[in-house]
Structures are given as C-alpha cells and as structure tokens.
Length: 416
Ligand SMILES: Cc1cc2nc3c(=O)[nH]c(=O)nc-3n(C[C@H](O)[C@H](O)[C@H](O)COP(=O)(O)OP(=O)(O)OC[C@H]3O[C@@H](n4cnc5c(N)ncnc54)[C@H](O)[C@@H]3O)c2cc1C
Image (cartoon, rainbow, N blue to C red; front, side, top):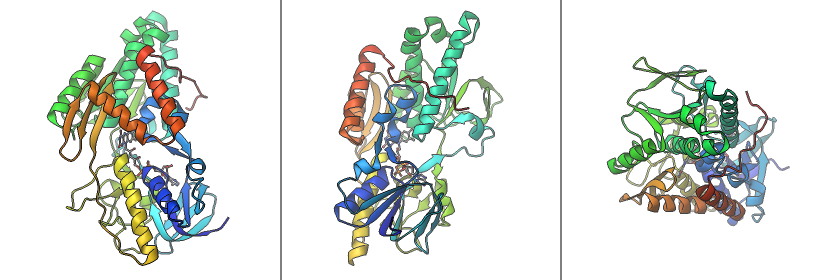
C-alpha cells in the first residue's frame, strides 16, 4: 500500500474516529493506524467485564465505519515510533508511513503511580482484552468459591479508585453479587462475598457536587459496596491490598481504576509531557514548538478558550477530533486555525439499577436517581457507534433490568 498521506491519525478512539470521519468527508487522504481493527467503546467496558453486555456491543470495525470515505485508509498495527520532525510513524511490523500532518490520539493507559505490585497483580480496565480477562477471572473465582461449598470462602473484590470508572465497576459487581450469584450459584456464596471500593480521597466521585457524592455513597452502600475512603493503597499483593494506615484487605481480584497517564506512543514521541504524561497542547490542539502535529483526547491536556483544563471524557475527545479536522483542513487549504471551543455537556456516573448521578451542562444542572439513570442510558446509546451495537445493548439492558440475566457469561481460555 501507499506509504505517504496528507494526514496520519494514530489511534481510533473517540478522538481519532471523529477526526478521520470529518477528514474523510472533506476528501482528505487520511490513514488511521490502530493496534486493533476495531473501535472500542471504553465507557461500557465495565459492563463487558460484568457480563451485562457483550464484546460485540462495544466494538465496531474501522473498515466498516469508514467504508463510505474513499480517501480514508486503515492499517492495523501497533505504532512503536513517531518522528514529529520527519512526520513519520513506524509500526511494530517495521512499516513506516509519512504524512504532512500527524494526529496523535492514542489515548491513555493505567497509571499505577509506582504502587508496588499494582502492575503485576491488579486488573486495569481500559481495553476489550482487559474487560474480557477480568470477566473471565471473576467467573473463574466464583466457580472456584462455589466448588469449595459451605466450607469455602466467598469471593472478595477490591476496586481501587472512587472516580466514575471505579464507582460504576464496583456498583455493577455488587449488583451481580446481590442478584446474580444467588440465581446462578447460591445465596450462601453471595453472603460470603464482598466488594470494596477504596480511595485515598475522602469521598467517591470527588469531582462531583456534594449532593451527587452523598447520593452515590448511600446507593453504593445500599447495594452492598463497602467503602474505605481517605486511605491510599500502598501495595497490591497476589491476595489483596495494603493501606497507608497499616491495614490490609484480602481479595482474589483487585481492579485498578486509580488513574490514567498518556499512552506509550506519546512518551516515545519526545514531545514535552505535562500532567499525567499528556501533552499540553496549544488552544488550536497543535503540539507546541512543532509544525503539523496535533495531539487529542486522553493523550493531551486540552484547555478551553479561558485556559481552563478540559476533562478526559469521550465527548471531549470526540469534539476535539472534529475540531482538529477543521483546523487540519485550514492547514491544507491555506486557511486559519481556530481555538478549540468545547461544548461542556457535564458528567454522569451509573451506580446501579435505577440509580445514577448526572450534572448536566456548564451550569451543572443536577439530577439523581431514575431520571439520571435514564439520561445515562440515553447518552450511552447515542455515543455508542453503530445501530446494531445500540439495539443489542438496549436489549441486553432490558433483559438485565427485567430478569437479572447474564447471557454474556461465556468463559474464554485462562489468561494467567
Ligand atoms: C472504564 C472507562 C469508563 C469511562 N466512562 C466514561 C463515560 O461514562 N463517559 C465519558 O465521556 N467518558 C468515559 N470514559 C473516558 C473516555 O472513554 C475517554 O476519555 C475516551 O475514550 C478518550 O478517547 P481517545 O480517543 O483520546 O482515546 P481512546 O478511546 O483510549 O482511544 C485510543 C486508541 O488508540 C489506540 N492505540 C493506543 N496505543 C496505540 C499504539 N501504540 N498503536 C496503535 N494504536 C494505539 C487504541 O487501540 C485505541 O483505539 C471512560 C473511560 C474508561 C477507561
């Protein structure tokens, strides 16, 4: 295939896909390079891990997504080197591609903050393989505990990180323990099992309002989640976690939702890294002191017109992708780039059945409970890529809501 393009986009997450689509619409010769042949919908990975929805609901092939854009091509390969001066990207297969403009949109990975044992023993939740591995190992641990009979222990899970990812994951696992284990295994096993949500900050959902925090805390506790807030995890061990206050919590599985840093491609690029290893981009989304290099989404520290930091969110990455495409079009046609104007839609987090919190728009209009739950479902249906995926996810949610079924529990091969 050709090796030279007008634009190369590294990473087909929310930002990269939005950029490729907008450039493809304008007939720009663009190449997307991603390590997978599919786009993955990160916000619902915890539901894959807890068997609420299937892998095919959160994935969509890039070639299927871009088939109508004749100027867009796709290469499935891991990028191992980016030369921001020569404008080339090199893949693990040894191929090198060149473009006038490079867009780095390779997202983020777990940041373990050098916590001993975390990388070896904790489960991250940032990719489809992460979700499948966690889901498999959860079911395996349940099977093993069930085989132990009434003499055996239960299954104990610790989720590290009380932000939206940790809250959603802990809530979903607690719901499985409360409703699904009694149905698929036994009431006794459910009674012997526990899920803990731990964080060094004093409350869950630290970035949300006090009202949302209080709602989330009481609903998590009602669902059976045991909270340990205000104590940092100092070590992750094969059999649990240790805290700064000297206490420990035994667990078969420790899930890491404790923080993010920019992916390895960004570190390798030689661009000056800021907070979280991300690139502090210019207001027009270009990298400082370079020509024709854009950095977007979770790989960048983006700001709004007033200089306020923008969040690491799917909608923010998606808007940045569209905006970058507009600026790239200006670069290619002699136009003028404009600063990224982010439309703040707010935050939301699912806590469990009929329970969610939402803080909508820049004025943070607050909604809790069933209305927020419905809003969460609506937003995620809209954000999901592909009509088949949307319909299938809605069917799975309805099935779950009405019957607590877990039809997506299909064990793969052991991964460890
Ligand atoms: C569990 C979880 C729950 C979340 N929930 C929400 C939510 O409810 N609402 C919300 O708005 N946001 C949510 N987020 C945040 C949101 O998913 C991210 O902000 C968003 O995905 C960032 O988009 P991105 O395009 O920058 O990167 P990503 O979506 O991470 O995409 C990066 C892409 O780059 C590719 N890639 C990485 N490295 C390489 C390489 N070396 N070579 C080739 N390709 C590479 C990856 O395969 C991937 O396709 C959640 C995130 C997680 C992890």
